[in-house]
Amino acid sequence: MGKTWAGAAEIVYRCTGTHPFLETKEPPIEAWLITYSHEQSVAVASKLWELLPKDQLTEDTEWIPAKGFRGKQQVIKLKNGSIIRIKTTNQGTLGLASATIDLCIIDEPPPPTIWGELSARVLRRREPDGRNGVIGITMTPVGRNDVSWMRQLVEDGKISDHPAPLTVENTTPEGGLPLVSQAQIDDIASRYLAIDRDARLLGAWECANPEACFDAFDEHHISEQMPPGGRQLNVCIGIDHGADAGSEFAVLTVIDRNEENPRIWVIDEYSSGAASETVHARGILEMLTRNGLRWEHVDRIVGDRAYGGKRWGGRMSNSRLIRAFEQLMKIPPGSLRPSVRTAWKPRGSVYVGVGIIHASMVRDNCFSIHPRCTNTISSLRNFDFSDGPYKHAIDSLRYSLEMITKTRLYAPNSIKMY
Image 1 (cartoon, helix red, strand yellow):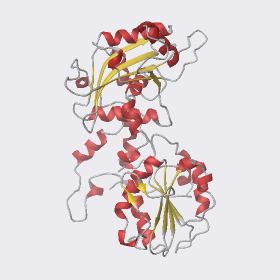
Image 2 (cartoon, helix red, strand yellow):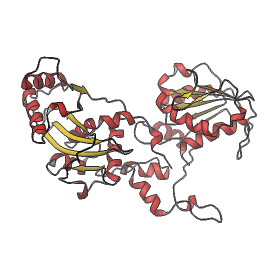
Image 3 (tube, helix red, strand yellow):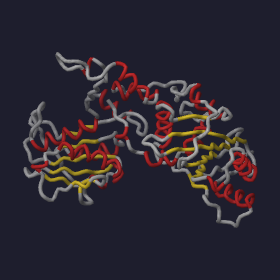
Image 4 (cartoon, rainbow, N blue to C red):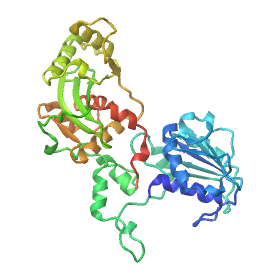
């Protein structure tokens, strides 16, 4: 049972007046389900649809697979008069204002401004015990959001938290056998980043601070074996800009997306300090050549945002690199295909990208790196989310995997919090 399922069940119990554990307000009530984005809302709403009693829904409530509930406002109506509205926090406080509701379930930790707005929405409703309307958060307190303000509310006794650790004891029914073994729990734990395990498995507020992020990375991931032929593979390059020694960095990867879990080969790297865009472009082209590749074999090349330079360092940007590639390949300006895309770097992109790399390492035969990629190997062994010297290779690797990371960014329900 995941956290999203629990939040959806709470909404259904209260809207139908069938809560098995609590005395709740009699329907009809109005409930809100809050998600981060529309994309996330579809995944969350699917859990709600699974649990809703279909015979109690009004005729104008329609579920469209992979799209959500029909209508721009995402409204679900029950025959008893209860209403469920699905909203997103990226609507801002304006989209959440001017309403009075009985129940609000939030699928991920919201910003303090959203919390304040939602708190005001439940002030004028009363539960049977005399308290205000209810706000519940099925939260994963890791990654994208700072939740220290929420922890302070718990410590001040203004809200309560209810962790449910994933242990053999907690998954053993009274008089029955365990639903999971310790070996299964250990396997689940291995799939999470080390900094997240206590939060995801134990419901802890404090996350570990390991010296190395990729603790699943070891010698068996280092291999001279190259990607197989006869399959549709994607050749990608990621580039991180900088002026310090080794901070202009490029990684060449090959991705097999033919299976449900993509397989990743990191086959080469290029690094340099402050130099002209021509030097960097030539180095990247030479990296392709020594691997038997030409520019037309590249499916996607992603570069960092423009680097402004330091006092004694040079400026660097994707547009400068594009001009240098065109000059070296002797092609007309504006004709470089594929061109260099600018990295997509919304909030949480580092955390999500690192998590996807780690997950590929845990799965059998899904991640390998050539031994000549010495700087990237060192970075995988030592990266700890800080802005130190190991960040450049990891950023380049993340950019090269944008075919995977960009499509999976902000899909928190793909990883359960137990």
